[in-house]
Length: 133
Image (cartoon, rainbow, N blue to C red):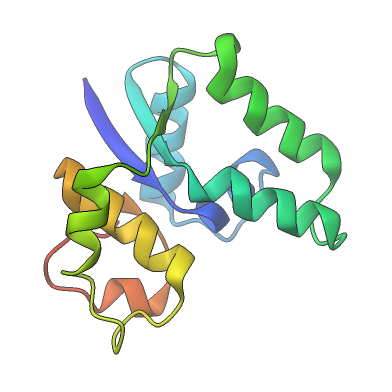
C-alpha cells in the first residue's frame, strides 16, 4: 500500500474539496479515502489546524473531521509522531530554503519516513532530499 505524508494545506483543501490541488494529488487523496493508500499526518498538522480554527481561517468542523480521521474512525489516515527520527531529520531541512518551522517539521517527517510529501508549498518544493507531489 502506498503511503504519503500530507501537509496542512493539502489536507485542508482535500477535505474542503477545493480546486487548489493538482489532479494527481486529488487522485492520491481519492485512493486514500478508498483505502487503497494511506495518508500520514505529521503531528504539527492538527496543531496548525487548531491555530487556524481559533483564528477563524478554517471552520471548526474541519478540525473535528481531522481529529476523527486520526482517531478511531479511519485506518486510512495515521498520525506521525514528532519523534527522534523527525527531530534528527529536521537538521537536513535547510532553514534558508524552508524558513517556517511547521513546514520544516512536515518536510522532516517525510524525510524521516522516506515517503513522498503532498504539498504545493514552493519553499518545500525546492528541497532536493524529499519527493514532493
